[in-house]
Length: 122
Image (tube, rainbow, N blue to C red):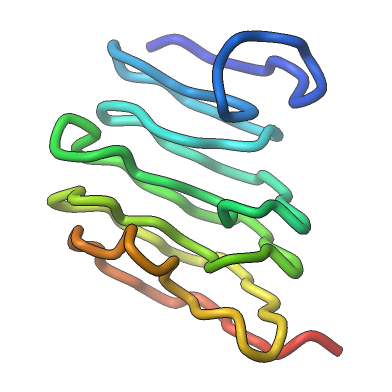
């Protein structure tokens, strides 16, 4: 298992703060995007146009997004994007009024939500 602790401020050609690819990974204390069997844990996302996480298409399988905080992410909070089996658990999502939980036009996937807390912005 690879472990990524790359700063989300690092310069790279990826359109995401972290874009995890194969093999299995643990992404911790970062901004997260996609992968295969990746665990996104203990990350903080704030005011991102594309939301806090995007599970990229059919190849990004068996991903878990847990223990994360999304605060005022814009355009939609999550993007399942044709993903077959994402798991969201024990996360806290603070949503701005009018921002959908699932991002428009990125909603064709499937996900399971377990013990998440979804709150309006204070």
